[in-house]
Image (cartoon, rainbow over all chains, first blue to last red; front, side, top):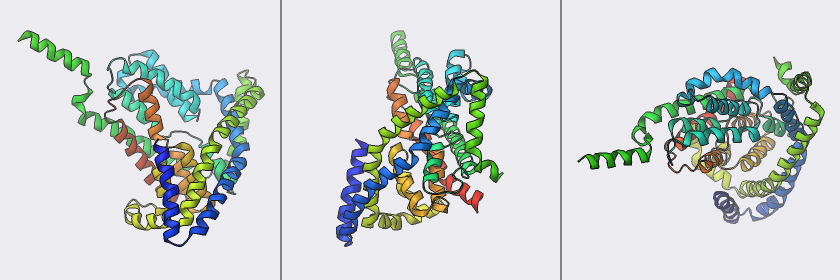
Length: 211
Length: 173
């Protein structure tokens, strides 16, 4: 529904604004141009996009993600203290992060979800600190090689479509660091709610019974 | 160093192929299967791109984007961002294909090697579809009280946007 509101808003606004500024004919021409541009964009990125998903499938099958996941475990143990004692959960988390690093989005989500399911079992309906951290890590892009964007740049005629890599790494690193920091700081601020609701209720009941 | 980034595609392709072959993976079969999956992804995003790029083209032709950019330019300047990037920032956390459409339009309109084109590309490459991811995760495990996940994720997104512009200025001067 969100996209319906955004899209309808965009189209209606451009008609109104075009009429008000006397650019009606340009808006009409743009509507046709836009569709052509979209199809042209898809055709021009199709080859590279498919090649990259092919290369990623080779990466997945050859176990690159598993190797990376083993390397990441010591760091992730610090980030997810509540999962450190649970080997299986730690496996899922590090596999999720390494799949994200390699850009294997389709593989990353089920791995992340299996860790999330285990985490949510302890607190019904309320996101634990670990789960918030996992979700925030997944909403921040940590993909090492942003292939889709590079493909779009190549299609637009860039001389070196991958020359943005250092800038992407820098921006990603800063964004992930701030996300992690925000989680750690906000975990303190939201402190009281972090107790599972059921526990609070059970505590109240026990107190009442004692009285 | 420049040669490495120019050659990065053939280097990665050959490196991954060698690694796969050394681990006794049927590299070619995997490549073809993966490429087929890529084609499916592409077919899935074409309709969304047609819808969104049409809307973006219309919005640009009507002059509404210029008006919005002029109105919001003080706030954007405060963050060190060009007002032209605002539509991309607004749509990025909500829809991946919409962001790709808006970003591709910026990259083609201003040129892939321009400051704006590069910044748009870095923004796309260093952020994710935040609300979609949050919905998938919390929806799948039945969490209704998301606590601070949304504000923390949006902090990371905003940092990504500001850092993208800064990193492009730093790397390309």
